[in-house]
Amino acid sequence: MVLMPCVAILFFAAMSLSANAQSCGPPIDPVIIAAARARKEGRKDEAIKILWDARKATEQSAPDSPKMALYLRNTAGLNGTDAVAALQRATDIDKRAFGPQNCAVAQDLYGLAFVYQPNQPSEAERLLKEVIDRRRARHL
Image 1 (tube, rainbow, N blue to C red):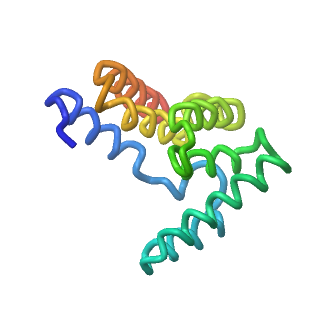
Image 2: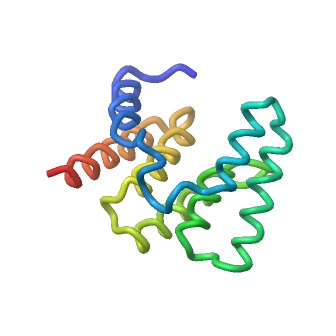
C-alpha cells in the first residue's frame, strides 16, 4: 500500500498510541486467542470461521456489548461484509461502553482510517488525527 507522506506519518503515530490492544476493552478473549493460534498455524479458514461463529453468536446474545465490538473489529470486511459499517458500529458500541477516550475506540477509528486510506485519504487523515488527539487527551 502506498501512503501519502502525511497520512503515513499519522498511521505510525496512531499505531504506536493504539498498539496496546490487549490492555484495553474487555479482558483477553479466548475466541481471539484461538483464532490467532489457528492463523499462526496456517489455518486461515479455521481462524475466520472461529471469529465469524463468535460474531454470529454474540449478535444473538449481546449485540450491544463490548465483546460484539471486539468481534466486529476482528471480522470487518470478512465474508463480504461492509468493513466501514462494522467498524462504525464497533466504534459506537465502544464509545457507549468505555467512553470516547478509551483505546478500544482508538482501535476502531484506526481500523476505519486503514479502510478509508486507499480511496479517501483525507478522511483517513482526519480519523488518524482524531485517534492521536483522543489518546493524548487520555494521557493528560
